[in-house]
Length: 266
Length: 266
Image 1 (cartoon, rainbow over the protein chains, first blue to last red):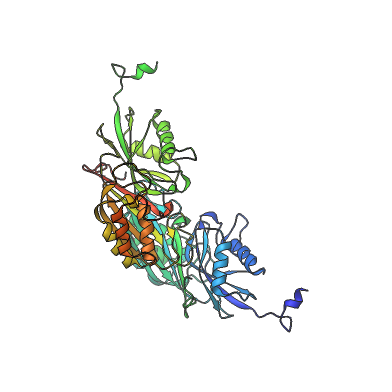
Image 2: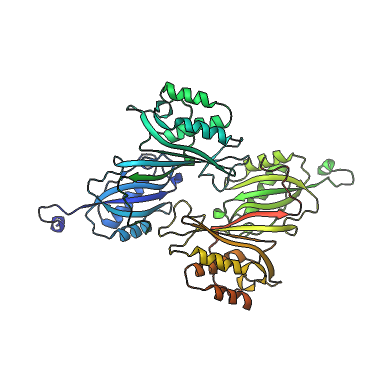
């Protein structure tokens, strides 16, 4: 009986759909399946299954850890559903938990790979730099109570821009550790510091393992020259502890051809 | 036995302490005691009791409803505790739930009344103006999916500035409804609209009952001239429905003499 619905040749016409996702990572064990709690992937695949009746596997542009947020994660999946993009977006936003939202939908080339085809990834790390702990942003920013020298952090961040072996700023990783960091800036607005980083690809935990040492520089515990030495020595994971997950945001993922150009934001 | 701790004459030396509070109003039934759940007042009085051993009543500069947030609420209470301000702040931040924080502490004049002595109150209302619902700010902003005309809203808001009878923009209120609105501005940054309002004192629900009609103007459902007519007629609560609570923030409360001048932000 199920075969009756299939197209001639036993193969349905399938299409690949890309979604742009925003999520609050607080309640999740991360973007991908894990044993220790719900993931963005698991709630998304359940919602797609409820919408289309199909069991799908979703591919992510970038992994995010437990507690890490996204405003522009990109995922893709295949479906034989003929629902219009707008209906997919509305339906998924109805079915998904309130801390995960689809902000754009597009039908893409069948070969589109959200991870391998990404040409730029942009991350933001948010620090609340004030004496008292934050109440409103307690899950959305790292609280650093001692005063941070934004200028020193920005100068040190500038030393990391360019093509380098970033092994010192990576978590455990077996592969090639050369990367090109296009952008690494530190800004202050009142009590809030933001670190903005961009690259085609990052090493595991690279953003958090860069923010950690930059904060050491901001606290006066590490000099810019020491950070440069750590970079040049490239000893794996030697730059110091990672900043906590809950200050990190995956802001956007870019492709050679804009994926959501015409169907942006419902 | 308790009397032994009292000063001669059976009366301890008491001092008045002012606190500046930040809170996420999501989990609370509002700033003041109510029957239907925990209030900011109840968790604060419990924390003060745990710190000082005294049962105190806390006075608020302004009432906030269930779901309304604050970054600069001001409260005051009397205590015979001799703990330093810094210790009061650290102790309360340790004892309070994570969604309430003390951002400044000061010992104030024994006559200081946070509500009656306030010379300015500043509120912010945040709107997420985009097609898809927000995930990260789902409890922190009002989601308005249809495009809002910020310019039309800003122009209409300007018509409300000055001394007027604001009865049309008030919830149920028996007293005098003339107020002076010092500031009413509408700004846009990307998908985010903010309405900033300032006055020495507001009527009940005045900010939310102003934002509601301003959004009607932004949607093209009400013209600026109609809003002005509603203002001039001053028929109680006639301006239309209030905007929802979770987009509203009490930003700051000011006094003739700055309260937290020297003890700001620990």
